[in-house]
Length: 604
Image 1 (tube, one colour):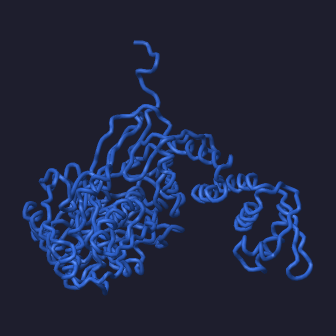
Image 2: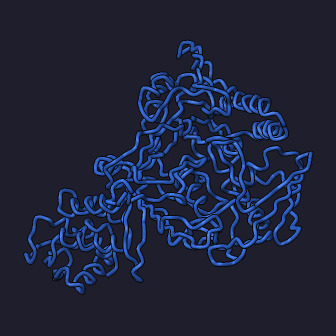
């Protein structure tokens, strides 16, 4: 039966919940129109369908306004349980949870689904249809996947999934600050850093079995010219395929950081002959896992048997989106394995010590490109001066401390940054000098930063700034109309270890800085980034980068608020744990040590 009709039945049954089954109930067509929120014609269609399915019996009253009789043949809880079972069997867990939340509060179905969900996640050993033993890792997330097409990724969760399915020419080891081979087994560059030659491994296979060639590399990277990540290829003058396994990039300008560029997740290589993109059909990759199924709420990855760096130990990885309001309950029922803003849970009882790792930096950006009060530099500076960042840190974990820039990293030769207090003049006098006259300003963020946003709102309202906070979903915040209509955005920048991740924050066309700048600001920013790429000496490169941050702060475009960290703990039987540049655990090397020599009775 169509799920929409079952939903209508639940709406009807809830409205008459106090009545037992098989009891005649007097009602009117107008009442039913109000209950089902649809036209009288559609109500009749729904009633006939439910009657055919033997969920109700219905007798229409003769004449306009006369009462009708409805008899329910099934109760609310029974029907809700059946529909929930159907959704769970189809792995539509998010829909099942939302259905129970709407219709099942306080019922046995609510208890059932919470118990089902809490036992669903973690490490599992199951037998396949052909009696093979499979190792599966399932874990919940509390945000949607927005894409795993490499040329569109921006959020860390999406980029992490891309890194499990695709490969880049080289990989950046952020811990050792070095590069290692990936699809390319060797590379070299000209002295002026304008020509870069890569030699590809032979025998690398896409998930459909086709061999990777230099043509795939060329056309994969050419896709970026028509994407929000076109900044990644703006330096490329020409891409030449020299042979089946060698490819040359010639640049307009010197770029000492070009290896960072080709190691970045959006530069991942796809099968160019499998050009469908999006969630329904994905281009094939060469990575350790291939996509079995994916949508915004659910993704299943299976091990790629012929991965060129060795088959993963896990057979399957499954991630499932849960509602944000279940996070606390899930974490009470299940210990965390790791948490980088999400949760991975298991039923294990032994845990290693927690570690703290730098997550990112919260930033408030101003939409200078929008007509309105925010175009006034004095107002922007005044608003940003009102934010008490010490009070933001006092909101507690995962906030680490006040920020003076994006990075909290040894690469930038800094320990914990110290921010000088800004001088603040009296509110009324300064506010009146900005020309602001009480216009409503919209601050947009997603649920992860709601607490910070409401504290900022309170601080600004106290000083006469009329601020409306709007909380939106992850997959809606990048909509063009959304970005054009907001005055401020609060988000977390997660650069994590190298310049390319910083450039992405500044240059990504659907990000939260680039769309908000004036043309002249974009030109100035591009000039700074060009100087950074051309600079040979790392210390001077860092100095120039700091000048870029200072320029944007002085222009009142952004304010660095607080650094954040996450705590990591995991089951002691979990081996192969290592964090990538996105601060996520790579799935490829994970395995569970279920058998320990010390626990076996063996003869010495």
